[in-house]
Image (cartoon, rainbow, N blue to C red; front, top):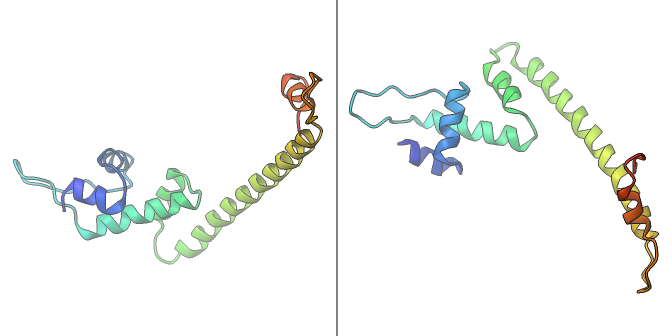
Amino acid sequence: MTIGQLAAAAGVNVETVRYYQRRALLAVPRREPGSIARYPESALTRLRFIKRAQSLGFSLDDVQVLLSLEDGQACSSARELGERKLAAVRERISSLRALEEALQRLVASCSTTRRKVNCPLIEALMRADRALV
């Protein structure tokens, strides 16, 4: 398949394929002078792997590690990387919950009357010296 067909099948654009090639995540296919580069089915499988890993929050550096793991050590190394990612996700969720609570408090403290009053939400956003959470 051509680079355009590969990109379309994976749901990415051609520049993404080229970028992954520059990052050595995806091999550049050999081609004879004057011919169109043809990608094997394995390139599509690898490209889909990259996109799935990204959708789980793995960075391209993480993906590169996952792709380079050898048989035998792969499962334990992949597990370690996955555990680190899971810890980061849990930390992010905790931060988002704290942010949600702070916003709920600020929204609840806003007056619904039409007269001009000080709005706690706007005041909190104007204060640069204090954290919301």
